[in-house]
Amino acid sequence: ASVKIPYYAIHNYLFFVSTVEISNPQYLKYVSNSHTQMSSSLKRCTSYTKYEIRKRNPEPKSCALLVIDVQNHFSSMATPILHNLNTTISLCRRASIPVIFTRHCHKSPSDAGMLEEWWSGDLIVDGTAEAELLEALDRKSSDLVVEKSTYSAFRSTGLEEKLVEMGVKEVIVTGVMTNLCCETTSREAFVRGFRVFFSADATATSDVELHEAALKNLAYGFAYLVDCQRLQHALSGAK
Image 1 (cartoon, one colour):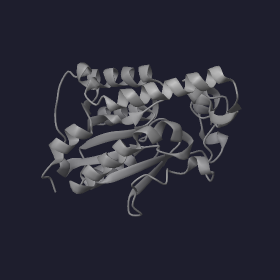
Image 2 (cartoon, rainbow, N blue to C red):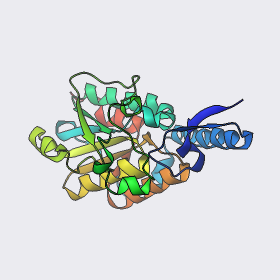
Image 3 (cartoon, helix red, strand yellow):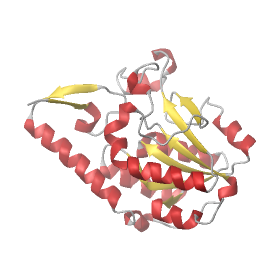
């Protein structure tokens, strides 16, 4: 039997790619094992503590939650963390923390920049089902959705100006992919003067090693690491 799976799930490094039909049982076993490892890693919510250099809790009154690119295109990576994502969103809503979603899409190849070359022209095209946010995501019609066309949610999106207007000084970063758009957005938030909190169990990518490496890098120089349990404790009682 053959199945259609995301090409990036096979090679662990492709980003803007659709699906290919695969019947080779060795490939199918590899993909299954890869996603099992990723899911198991995410269940170990405290595993990221080995990378921590410093700890801090977010301040609800000056914080915003960023949910990065949880779209149909990335469903194979986003689905295993969907419970943690929605839990994080719920915790933030209860603490009156605004929730902002991003959606990666391209109107045409001309707005893709280096991404077209890097990913051989395989882009998430606006107006397609692949570009839409997952239906199972806890999103309200009043939530802000920021469209972006590169790894950073800050580049040419007006996000920084919106956050400043809202009085936001801290961001919690969740979504996909850990080592690409989530990490790039976190780094840019840091250099733009925002305090960054990065979720270890509500982010995901195509490979466990890439996920862990991003957590280690961010903890070293850019972000405080958190998970659902830590956020629940930190935000309990906040309104």
